[in-house]
Image (cartoon, rainbow, N blue to C red; front, side, top):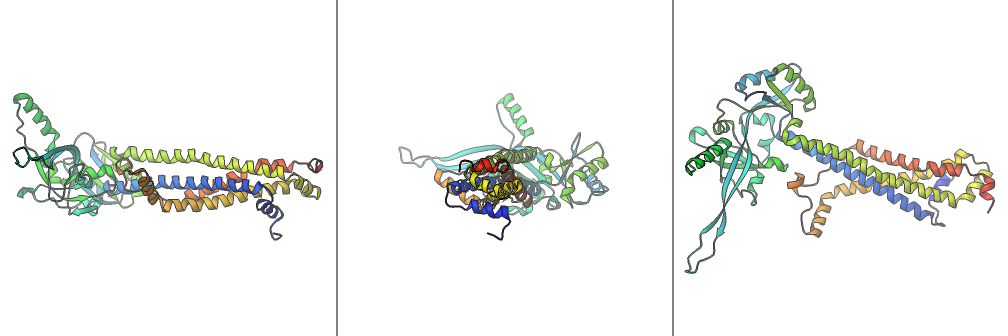
Length: 448
């Protein structure tokens, strides 16, 4: 190793020495750094993947901006659409009106037949009446594709809403409603819906004379969409005209959905559009939506907190490097004394152990990067294996929203993790290097 600089060559010779137990301690230190880096890469990449996929699904379902009336529903939405498109400094790609509400959906699900009675007669069919409060969205079929990816998220059937003049009440639904544990629906099945107003009228009528004379509206489900984000897969989408009639909002809409040419300019566009439209309207970004605001904030906070907490793993690994190098100094006291007696400066002696810290960190970081990337590549297979061992599903989409564990490896995150880890290892060598540099040759060789 004569081709290496003095400090590097001697540091390498010490590290790969096989005559002492120091090499085993070095191996443990390298493994500690490797595991610390790998854990940081995996956790930060998974959290970044959660954040990125959440944004991607929200962009597909929601638009960049939403315009709402501050005091009432939007009456003249055609005029407002023109004003939105003409806002100075904002490049608008599409505008679409929507009607938003919540309805009580119900469906009778066949559960088989009761057992044969004592006379041998066939049992009665068993049925289960299932009910749930679901979001209802009425969309303009001509413009919804400009602001939403829903038309391209259909996984069964097709997005068609029929003609109300022909009494065709068609809708599409999220795949959650097709789940056997929910409504067990298929394309062509019907679901009955009651509005809040109808439910209140039914309660009043029941209290008055004990009867329930209000009939629901029956929608025929023409297809199912999958946003791959669990909360959105319970929506029911129908035509804007059907929603207006059902919710008694003739001629009015709840919101205007706005798609921008550059989604990254959403905050600037929100400010400019809010100023242009005046105080009678509220302009919100997708981050302001009640269904998403808390999820996005939680993921961002969790990513920061996880990095803060897990970086202590690297601090522990750095202490392992420090311990290893202190043992090196103790074992190599005689050699240090000889080096200084032969003319090695304090800086050269300190450099030997700083180079050792750098070498341990470099090898550990490199191996940790490889292990972390390998773990990310096979993350979902590993989860399936753990689920198989436990006899259950580890990653439940009802809780975590997504079908698989997402991950996004960003170069800046990897560089930051590896750089900080390497720096921690070098700094871990400062105390042993300082102790080695301050040894006096006479003291080091006195008992040799």
